Length: 218
Image 1 (cartoon, rainbow, N blue to C red):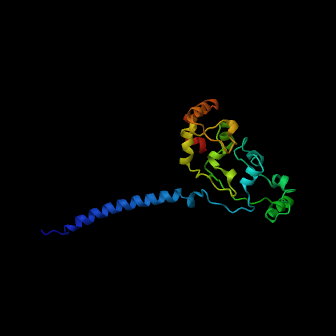
Image 2 (image 1 turned 90 degrees about the vertical axis):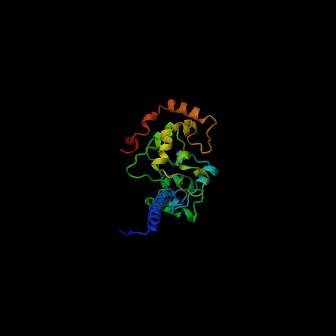
């Protein structure tokens, strides 16, 4: 019986298999790069806001603390977006006629809230409590980056579960003394791991429970 396929068909078949496998790998790699890119995570991407707010001016130059505006950060799950009356505490006197602050003045006079665009926003199926993290020694800059040095507030980290788990699996690498939580210039010491382990014990952190699904997904 004569051969149906030419011998070269074997080579073509092998190349097709290898090519198909490479295509699957490339598609997977491309998908992963897309998911991790700023286009998907919005990390470092400025969001349009009703008023151009600069953390750099308010924190670095004026000297406001994080808690002055984000009043719920130490006691509640939500750090809080300051009401316009907080803004008007200063801006009733400072830059009181600035066109850029007209939305703030109008909101204060009419009671209509400003429609701020959320920069950091978790999915509805994720439970997150600011107060727990702050009171256990997680600094603002750990999650939000050096917002105090930025004129435009942008997302500092992806906030993906894989990113959160880096800390939940080894909190000793990231914890700082509670007195330094709001210090945006704090740097980990050379013996961070040793100091971090002490903070884990002092703050009553049960590391074995930090990766339980129910901790964040309730």
